Image 1 (cartoon, rainbow, N blue to C red):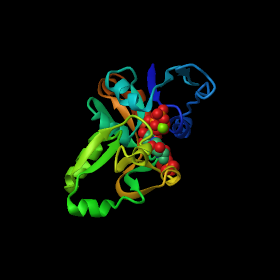
Image 2 (tube, rainbow, N blue to C red):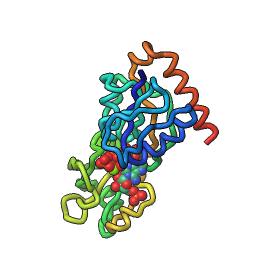
Image 3 (cartoon, helix red, strand yellow):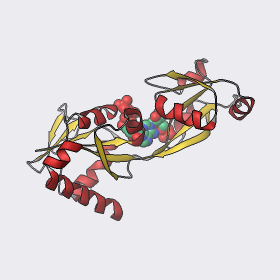
Image 4 (cartoon, helix red, strand yellow):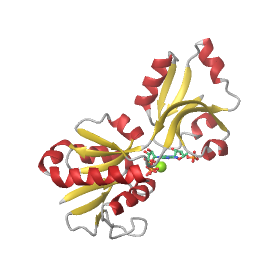
Length: 213
Ligand code: PRT
Ligand code: MG
């Protein structure tokens, strides 16, 4: 049995075509089913639904053999125990610094002032600002970072941006792009040895499907 960990929403939706290329159809729709373990058209493959941030942990400890996780999530997790053979080029976005339109981020940086930055991505943010020599006080949040600058909790945020409409709706401006984000296939290192053939096959099919897509 091969167990694949996916999160509901964009990662599940965008992984489906890759599974299809491998002849794997998921038996149920996670949006309507309450099941957390989904059978597929291949009796030796099943999908487990976990929170996006839990995917690396499931795969690291062997709760799943494979998984799909965003680069953002993998960088915060650290990637220990994970083999990352493939950038699937799905669930694309970027990680950026955003601030209120009336906050002069460039001036604050130039003057060397401390900038209060709220984010869920403290590891990436710490590295980014350290590289740039920007002094920051990081405030760890778990949700709705856009609210932080609006309430005075922070001057700026580090968050994911795709269309930009969330920032716009909250009167925030993207002031710096940190990195491009997409999702990767992650594999448990022990599983790769024990279930080498079927896992290698999946990696090859996904890889060809990405090249075509
Ligand atoms: O939503 P939940 O709390 O359950 O978990 P999650 O947010 O970790 O999961 P999910 O499914 O929302 O995101 C899974 C992965 O998708 C992330 O780890 C990213 O790698 C990737 N991804 C791609 C995104 C986005 N695009 C994205 N736009 N993840 C989140 N967003 C959010 C962003 O945080 C912001 O709130 O969408 C908003 C911005 O979108 P725009 O289009 O308004 O710019
Ligand atoms: Mg989300």
